Amino acid sequence: MNIRAKICGIGTPEAMQAALDGGARYVGLVFFPRSPRNVSIATAAELSRMVRTGTRVVGLFVDPADDMLADVLAQVPLDLIQLHGSETPERVAAIKARFALPVLKAVKVAEPADLDAARAFEGVADMLLFDAKPPRGALLPGGNGIRFDWSLLTGRRWDCPWMLSGGLDPDNVADAVRATGATAVDVSSGVEDAPGRKSPARIRAFLTAVAGIRGTA
Ligand SMILES: O=C(O)c1ccccc1NCC(=O)[C@H](O)[C@H](O)COP(=O)(O)O
Image (cartoon, rainbow, N blue to C red; front, side, top):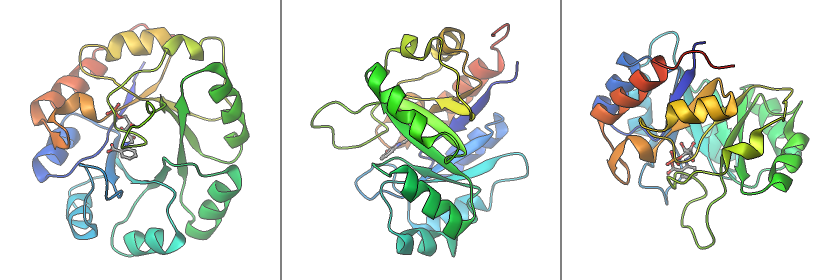
């Protein structure tokens, strides 16, 4: 089975090239100033120009206002909008209606109730991204390099595509896919050698590991 991979928080041409060469199906650009992966609109526009057919550019936002989305989209041709804040299903629907782009909605997972609540986004979001809920006091709502209990996903079926995220890296991604049946995976910290500093070598290692996953459900 071909597992689709998203490399998130790309900030340099070298990281983008490693992701593209390695076959990433999604590349994520972070528009969240508190993040060490935040990129300017100008940098994002430059990086997006490197992307060729077959790879989708994901713009990552946290509770964005329409003006911010409009400002980014005026210069960066995003293929998907990722919402990683506390956006409601109604807000997701409003963003989809106004900007006519698919929405990847992040669901922060720590316990079964978090997955129960995610049902509200089925039929609204185009895709769900299951990520670890940030620990109390965390500075970031995502990109924390922590896993959640993958067994929480066992036995659950979703009416929309979903992506596994949170603490993945080249060494654990195969186990994560086998444990969850994920057909799409997302990584940020696990392919960095320092917060916000993507490692082309680790990007290549992650994508090689993903490409080598066989025999999953
Ligand atoms: O990556 C960030 O800096 C970030 C900041 C604010 C909100 C979301 C953020 N990342 C979202 C992603 O899609 C990450 O890839 C995901 O949380 C997994 O991160 P990691 O556990 O570091 O692989």
